[in-house]
Image 1 (spheres, rainbow, N blue to C red):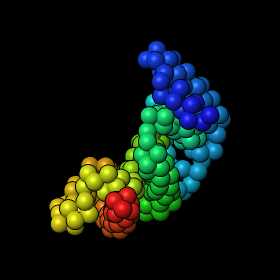
Image 2 (image 1 turned 30 degrees about the vertical axis):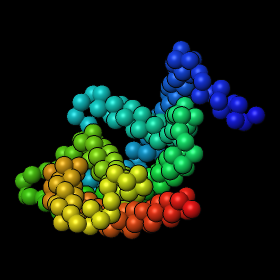
Image 3 (image 1 turned 180 degrees about the vertical axis):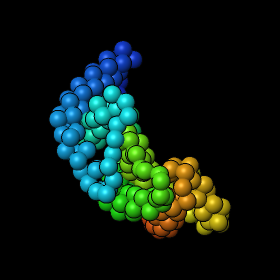
Length: 249
């Protein structure tokens, strides 16, 4: 019975596929909008928590709509974060029937693995990196120059830093996927390690605000993540070889 349902699912016409896609996009839009509206109710709480990271700084807003737009930006990002599991589930339900069992297993593992590392990166940035960055920046004060930091620029710093660390913490999962599908081998990664290190520092310079301390604070975890990814990728390669050996008998 299950096989028949799966066959029916795979034999949908183009119009039926497009109809299903439209329905899922509508579901995703409604859930995202609902989560965003709900998150807006807690925007003030989140703003106070962000301000708490820099208790010695007095923030200002320099345009009439700046604070409102900041609240909306926070609500949209939190709405996307909260609704992400549902959105990913809808995408998965649409594409999974076209995948083989091994592909589905690999994709599920990658999604879980990647999500965990993204959250770790975001939390690491918010709780550890940002307070250190702000303390470092505020150490550069000069007599006769008063600080006047807009909340919008502060929010942009927080979002860019958290997002950058979240993306960079995806490095191990990306390396595992590349090794699992044989796109890039661990032997290649080890051979060109010094060039990869250079790319890491360049990426850190691009992803972070234009200051050396932010770049170094991002590059160091990236180097560690590369080594962790290399370890997991090696394990994935060994597992792949064992499966091939078992199938050959």
